[in-house]
Length: 221
Length: 30
Image 1 (cartoon, chains in turn yellow, red):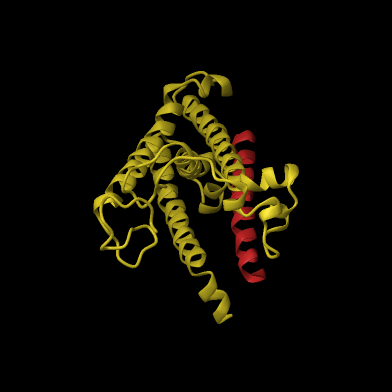
Image 2 (image 1 turned 90 degrees about the vertical axis):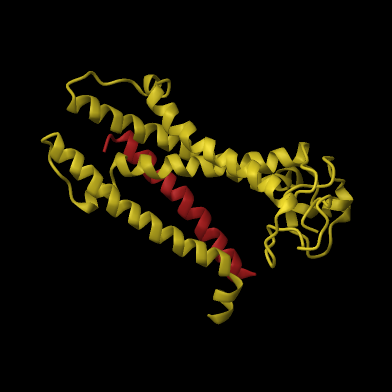
């Protein structure tokens, strides 16, 4: 048990922070929902019903999709572009060799099985993190679109206005405002972290270069 | 590594289940 906790420190810490935050979001979102309902002379709902509402789903997923997009794009971008002096960058943008990646005939005895086999399995496994992030990004963005659509139509109904189709909703300013308001903050942070880590340090952290590393030194070392 | 893989699987399944859950919520107009 002690080893389980020690070995999974990051996942358990952030898992706990996530659960606390998503529970707080449910509690506060439920109050917001009922406040709006009272203002519109509509029925209020219980917390259990709120947890399976599009109001909650939309609020959760619009933030999820942007995080996955951020990590996906960052992982992709660092293959092709560099940031001189950054802890988050390679020295030069070039495709790594099979030897460097320890795949196929360069694999070790304890390398992952799909890294050893070669062929399509090794190709898929070589990009498995990107594939999974892409699936989660597309899934959560799709989830944002349908929960946002349902919620949008509920509001239209409250105001005595006609419902819209899903395809109409995903072309609406409402959907894109919810989407890009999350994207903008992610992209700003990515760019800032990449450039800040050239000149600023976080001693003891993997996100930083060593404190005494020259500004011109690229990569976390 | 089995105890680390268990956490990996828990994260992955939780995320996929969360997305599937809210896709159903949205499509059923809840």
